[in-house]
Length: 401
Length: 205
Image (cartoon, rainbow over all chains, first blue to last red; front, side, top):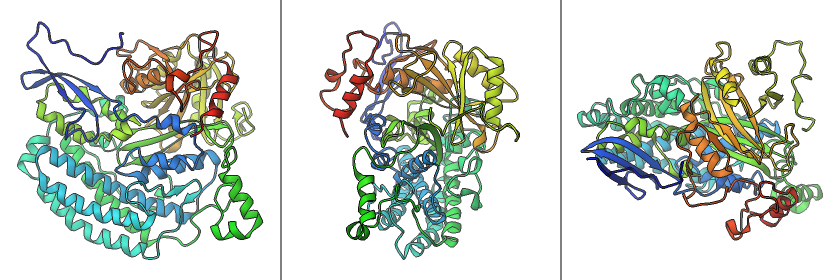
């Protein structure tokens, strides 16, 4: 097949070619769609991606295992903590270490709070695209509270880089539990407002019900994961199916849809926010005491005060930091996955036994979900494209890497 | 292969075999000529096969009622130049991560690796087996230059259409003048490992 830009033949037909993006308010990042239209109906759709390709997988081969955490922030930039945690878990699997219980619980709390933050942005922008502006403001007000919390914990609002291989950067602040409970206590009120604005809103239902339908069989065949898969009625959540980071300790439900349309995906994500609050409440209530890093000087940098005063600590510091040293997992390959807000975020890491990975592959959830997009919009109106695109929650940074 | 990796022959046979072990066993029985190796590392099983009948192997994994690997998690590739010696010799491995929803827990996962030599970098596409293979295979083609036979739309996905090189190959530099720094071997179609090591050492992140 010749390598040409996606073009739709318009000669000799009544069809019109419409270019959507790469700069379009509803594309959330830079992605392009070439639509072949018959009047207002979509006959064919060719997505064109790669505008945000940054070579993250190539970069991974040239960085040591801890340096790469900074890169993971930039993938799904709506929930960077979920990426940090997924990557750290993958490297820990490669090394065969288990982080202390407290670190696991902190990771769960931050993962679930990122899920809420991610879903709030998704909801706000999705509703905004369809024409409901208020939801966006309500959602972002809550996200602001979460970002303040992330800032207090990690020191950064967006590029958190909070995890380290073998634990987290440092322990949470002393008032962490109060901050989290303050958030979870007030969130349901805003949630009720958002729910009241949309769930039984006539316009919202008209725009979303029966739109972008994908059946359960098709969703599995197209490698769908996350809310898009569950919206089609497949009950599959990695937190339940393959618990990691102590998820088996928590009691929560996995919401599933039935029809697999935009409305079902909306309902699934809404309910997931409530379930996340439930998990976070349980985790802060039972947050164990103890260390937040594994006790292994070959993996974890010593305290600064010790580096300056103790010979062994200085040597360990040196060994971890110096090029060609650092964390050296045994040669081998692992695949590890976590349930990120968008679905299965997988890490396939090949190690050759040196301080840098031989290959880092990211399995981006929205990349897999987005490839079925032409199938989902065929026969719909052009205004539905925006609704379906929003329901998949394509994050260009994660899509293109 | 390091000490940490053990082949299935060395695995203790006393306990009941796990689902992945059973999978490896069944694939071995069904395709004795194709399976090169089946090994475990950190609980992950990798079945290494020749590329010739890869689509049949994948279809078997999907359709066998006892296995039912109904979900294709990912298709990717690795450039193994200088990493491992394999028989048959192969520079690339095309990796299929599969998952069986019938199983709970991590047990339902297996990885299939098809060995792909540099001179004949063509594999049968998995898109007829799972539609979800369409874009990942395009990405592998884009990044490694491995072609997929039977793929309905094998175009570059992430890189520009007029891009000529394959960025995730080990002979493509991270830094520098980009494609102008690509190693030009005397024998096209065969990259010298020494050149790759030199290139890697000169381009630090």
